[in-house]
Length: 253
Image (cartoon, rainbow, N blue to C red; front, side, top):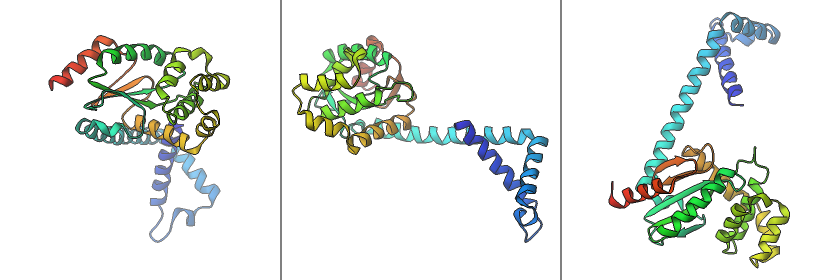
């Protein structure tokens, strides 16, 4: 899809070139019929394939630069004020909210399930210093249950049972599916009617989408990914590396 966008941009550039060849006061479309105009463009493409390549490369470079600039701006803001990441997301751990550990995750991702065990162990010994915030990043193109699970967990949040629901989704990942979401809601004594309304609501979908958009804006391309007071990294974390990072932040380095 992205390549097609680049190619269309290149073709549009060629159209502008053709249009600029029109005599003063006349446009290319005024001089040529649609068929002739299309033939002319195709002729230029055949004779100048490098034009397409150069245009695509230029577009890619421009887009990458814009994305990097936007990403750096957001990360700079987060470094100055880590609480910007909290919004209405589920949080646990330290109430001081001085060290914000944002996790972008997918309930169906096997690597996220591995990372969950690491993060849970890490938070057990750092809950007085670190505030963990969960951000949804369902990879729904490859994980059919990623979004339904995210929506179900959001519904559990509305009844203050997010973290219990979250833990069960990761720890019983092989059970993900409609029956399990309902079964889990019942086991946590959730109001089932409200649970079903909430997970099917537009508000739930909007909340998930906002997390995804935030993730993409800071460079999240896969899961799990993390942002700790502006420090971005991805993959299953090593608990010693996590502890080292927190110690550096606490010491002001």
